[in-house]
Amino acid sequence: MGTRLAWIFCAMITPALTLAEDDLKLPDPLADAQGKPITTAEAWEKEVRPRTLELFREHVYGRSPAAPKWDKAASTFTPLELPADSGMSATDCVLKFPTPKGQLEVKLRLVEPKPADKPVPLFILINNRAPDLADLDKPNEFWPAAKIAKRGYATAIVHVAQFDPDKNEGFKDGVHALYDTQPRKPDSWATIAAWSWGASRVIDALSTRPGIDPKKIAVIGHSRGGKAALWCGAQDERVALTISNDSGCTGAALSRRIHGETVADINKGFSHWFCENYHRYYNKEQELPVDQHQLIALLAPRLAYVASAKEDDWADPLGEFLCCVHAGPVYRLLGVTGLESDKMPEAGGHLHGGRIGYHIRPGTHNLTLVDWKEYLDFADRHWK
Image (cartoon, rainbow, N blue to C red; front, side, top):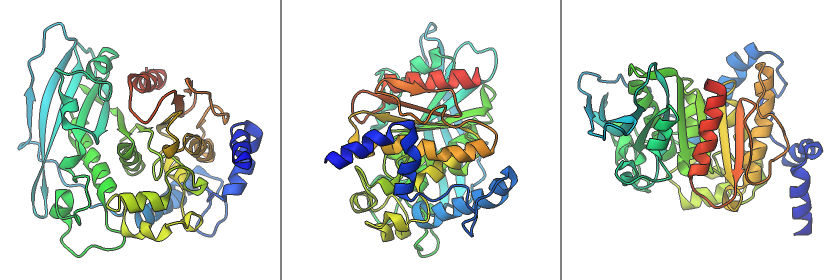
């Protein structure tokens, strides 16, 4: 235990981060297929980024189908009645998309600030908890719609079960039932990929809405929803800000640290979340061709945000912070700053100056008003 505590202490101060990287033997996010470092933004965009995406598709999340064309004419937008002094408007949206096996219907609730003299940024929350968190008559911390609107942002909440129920049922329902026309393969998409793909379908529709600024769209998720948000942002470059709240293993935590939840733990407990190939890496993290800092790097040079909770050891706060640190070289290659510092803040502290934001709050695994305040402050700083 003493050795472990000493390592953690060293990893939290700047001079030891390079040593921590050497100890972990992390893949170089700027290496080409031959393992040689690249030195230009062009090489990143044309060679390394596409290859990294393919490695995540093949070994971790699986391959999602192409985007269907949104059926705008068949979709509906129904305004809700709110008090005149509420400072916001609300709309229930039903989005429809054609699929190989029938129509996909996606329901979500959209809240926009009122009045607004110009298009506003939008936060899309991937809701992996109770559907009634969208109930505006019962304010909650997980989706504080009124508070978000008061800060001048629109927000939408969409429940994951519409894309795939969070259960191991052999991919017989949800969007897999609509798209899997051939036998599944080892790199076929699974549940996290379905949720990520679904968030992009929300962007298809809401990015065209007159009151929404299509260049300032954020996707946010908590825990397993945070994993989905990261994979959505990595693949969909319309996402200008990707937010991971306590996403942990196969989210924003480094797998090679083998701290808290591990690759074996997550695959045994939630075998439906990731593609079949990922199951090959039980207790073999060093054999993975990627690690999660490369997922954060796929967001560069766009805005990214990772948040941790001090008592959420299962999600490995230090591993989440180091993930941001080791994505930094890609941001620097593209001419911007990732994290503004490689020293982990104390609980209650934050780093907002770079293109990667980070905070760690006191408390346990949850999405709280404290987290939302940090995200909105970060958006204010970079968007306003």
